[in-house]
Structures are given as C-alpha cells and as structure tokens.
Image (cartoon, rainbow, N blue to C red; front, side, top):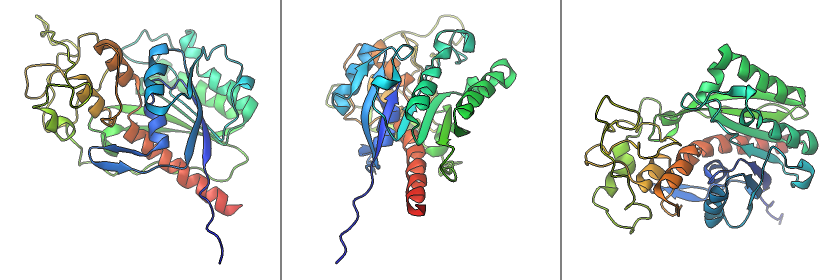
Length: 323
C-alpha cells in the first residue's frame, strides 16, 4: 500500500501585517457568517508592523508571530526566508482620503521594503495590496513605476483590480492586488472568478442578527460612537447604510464619522464594522473604538484575501505537479 502524500505547506512572511486581515485570508480556518473557510496550505512564520497596537491585536488572535518593526529600516537578511511574501503596503499616500504624497513621500516609498526582501530571499510569490486610487495617480505613472520596480528584480507581475462585493464581501470597496511570480516559475495564478457579481450580499445579511444585541455577548457589539449628524451638509461618515445594499467602505480614519446603521438611530458598532469587513466574531478588538475601527478599516477583508489565496494555492499545486 502506498502511503498518502502529506499535503505541502508553504511558508509566509507578512510585511505591514496590521491587525491581520490579509494573513487570515491566506491562513484560512475561520468561520464567517456560518460559512467555513477551510485551512489553506500556508503557514505564517513571521509578521511585521510598525504599529504596536496592531501587533497586539494580531498576536491576540494568531499567537505571538508578529513583531514591531520599522520596515523602512529592517535588514531583510534578519527576516526569515519564506516561499511567499505578502503585504498591504501603506496606502495613506495613495488614498483619495489621504495626503496624496504618492512616491514623493516617505510612506509612499515603503513598498520598496518588499523589493529588498524579494532581492535577498527570492520568494516564489509576492502579493501586495493597496487602494484603487493608486492606479489613478499622476495619470497612471505611479503604478507603472511600482510594476517596473517589481519586474526588474525578476518577477512577472499582474495587478488584479477586485471589487469586494463581487467576491462575497458586503461592502462597497475596491482594492488592487499586486501579484508577483518569480520569473523562473511557469505560468501564473488565475484571477479569482467574481462569483457574487450581480448578487451582492447586503449589510443586513452581514449584521441583521445583531440588531437586538447591545452587550458583549458578541465581542465589540456594545461599542459605538454617539456622535450626531453634521449640522450642515452630509459629511463623509454621516451616510445611513442602505438595508438591501452592501455597506459603504469602512474607513481607516473614523474618529466619530462612522456611518449610521440602516434602521437604528446610531452609528455602526465596532463588531458591525468588523462583520462588514468579514472578520469572524472570535476575532476581538481590544482597544478604544477609534483605534479598533482604524485597524478594521485598514485591513484587507479576510474573505477577499481568501479568494486571492485560494488562487495562489491552486497555482502552486499545479507547479508542483509539473515538477
């Protein structure tokens, strides 16, 4: 009798890990809205972020594999080699809601920490993530520079523009994924199929069961801002969600300007924001409301990340079978 082959696992190093949305998507093994997302063939061996509170939230959920680090200064030779590098490099300088410093700013240059790691360790796959506005900056020149830099160190590069509701996320949010394959590997992963196109999940689908929950029987559900609406105009964050549609984007700079519930006269709770971002209910946020919602808003929705990760896993399986 031939013994069954052990399923191959691929190691991951995570840069700019934040609270862990992208990482959870790659790891899998979570339940969101009664849907089981299976364990994927990836093992996160080390994660890094500059924000101490993000690292604390990350480690509370994943275990102590995240480290506080300034990735603009870290020596990649002191970081473990991995099969895959992932990282949602800081988006503030590219976001339409941010200072728009672009590549001329210090934060706008942080994607180069990925390049340094790639040059030293030559991972098989690299997945970077950022905001949609990046592709519009300087009439498309900024994204061309980033793609050129990634390509010139020996990687094939595609940018996947993904509208989150197309992939089961109950939130209007578009993100760019920079998918890079080392140029000695054959083929390329397939962009995930948008299985929910035209059949979007609504905010009510995501949080409707929480409408009568006012305590911490579900973590973070009692936490919300009591701010009133702006006296003049309809400022960002003063919108009321539409019950039958995906929610507005959960923003990373909320202060008190979190959007209003679709039927209750209050703003969304921390848990409702986490649900809209597709975090499972056992993923807890232990800081003040502003900090927690900022962490949630900065994250990649795990369900969206899982779609990307499944494509990467299928590609690597095909490559293994060819060898």
